[in-house]
Image (cartoon, rainbow, N blue to C red; front, side, top):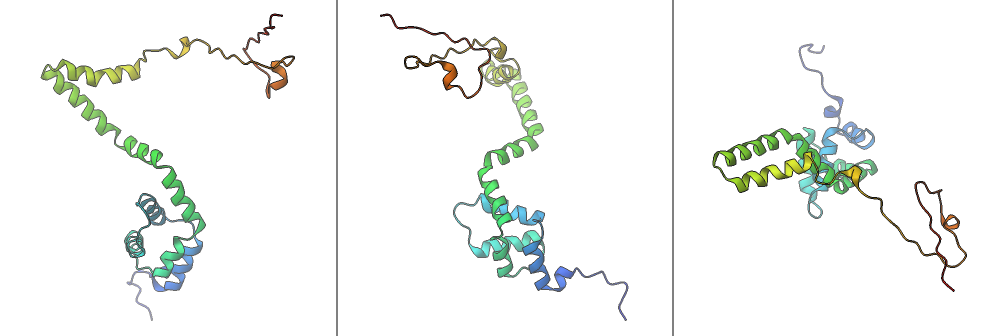
Amino acid sequence: MTDSSAPPIDPAARSPKLAHTTILRGALLPWMKALAEWHAVQPGTPKQAQVIALAQQLSGQPLRPETVKALVTRNDWLGYREEMALDELARAKRRLEHRLDEYMDAHLWALQTAKKEQDYKAVAAIADPVMDRAWPKRDVGSQTAQTIIVNLPGGQTAETHLIEPLSDVEVVTVEKAP
């Protein structure tokens, strides 16, 4: 007879083989993605022992080395890792966005402190970039149209070289003087 007060046993914890197949065939779990993100920012190739230790820490369960090796060779895991490595700028932007309130508070504190100290140079250095961002010095709508000059060999017209029809373009044909 079984003890009904005992907590249910996770099948993956009971059978290392089942955990191995789950890791090989299932969707990428959050800990697997975290491992790929860590792996993507490491200089060079991390040592296998480091990868195994971190995988065990992130998964919260003991993992066999061959299971971790199989995980890091999965195509979807490798693709996610490459995406994270290439998308380092986006990852940095997300981190900044998460801390935007903190940066705004620090900016306001710096401005208030500079005003209190009557440091007009610091006030200008802090306030000017914000003012430029809020009210750009150049109005985007007032930019003049760009003039592009294309010289075509004799007898050819612009229409013969276009992939799409032109819109809002003035075509001027200039004949050579005899």
